[in-house]
Length: 575
Image (cartoon, rainbow, N blue to C red; front, side, top):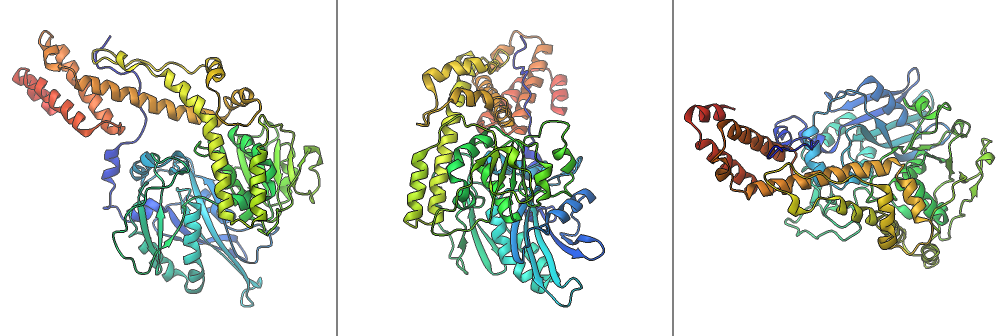
């Protein structure tokens, strides 16, 4: 066995790459938050067209521009007059390179998995205005201001648009340039810190959660070091929607929706507007937090989307996607999909909105299809009647929507944590014992995940939730989902890194110089090269090892080199 060798390769970008792209790059602070800002207008000859992209040197492909154009306007069936806000998500063009790759990974290291920057998709946040205007041929002013970002901060970017869009529609381009220059002065999005973001005379104060915080717990209050003028507008969350408002007409079916999301089932949300469509899809995706939803999801999807054919083909089973749509044409297109949620307008009133019913898919045939959840799905777990009663009581007592949302979010969070906990416990048992990690041997392997072995552990340590039902059946179905695959890959990578760290610590604690005394020069050089590689990998993959430990290892390498003949020393110092 080769000492210090490691057969496990670790993937991930380097911290060195991140520091190389620091503030010297133009627009580097802006790009830490946004990819670009676009203005989409309606041209009589061209239809939807991009009027402006800022900064000017941002390179969007023609395919991306076309997608942004179509996704930035509500379709004609929505009848959106006045100002409308919604969001979309689009696939980036293949082969696109990111100029800010290093920055992303410094951020992603500390951010919860559900809030990490995306490498393959953009999020678009839209502020659309349609008002009567006699000076325009069509009789209407129609324009969208769109913020494009890799960050899933729907609440922050919606709030940003509420500040800048009305002003932009009045003053146009110079105003947009000023806003982008202000954003280019913002501090970097650092998880765990309270950040003040000034724009157009308003200071938005936000806090991005870090992955070390307990989900759903109260963030640590940071002392205010300056008296800001104007006083900041504090956003309670950069990403959380009003969950109660989004689910108000499907409250009695929350258990079913949670299971469909957990299992990554194909779901279509048919809504009366892009606002309802996008908010509902994002609420569904967030319902399984802190687990990351690993399928594709499109908060607003149109027939012009580049993936339309791929997602609507009848020659294969529907993909693991959640689509939010508003065009009634889709009712016919998606008849073969297993789960369709047809919603009406989201209107918050004093009473419980009429709850939609679960209906057979066969009834989904006409363009005037009534609201309902069209599915043949039977839940594995029973409904939580206590939760529904509590929320109903809240409606009667006129409890604020944000409080109702907090109750609902806490329930879903605890249910997901309860589901994941037995899996986490089982993973711990797959780790090699610490005593088996020797500096003189290859790092021990992590045992393979066995579904059957895991199922046996449920008898002693099953989910802690009080909900009755077929938990075993739910786990078996979960193992076939993209969410299990994504979760397991991430956890396995983290476990591999942990074993790497333990091995490094063992090497640093060993007397390497004594080991070399009776070894040949070839063996010693081989050891030095392997130690250097291990050191480089630790820094490149940002392993959670103390810097002093790495410095000690570096010192050990230098000591061993010093014990060699001068010609070899010169050669090794050159490398």
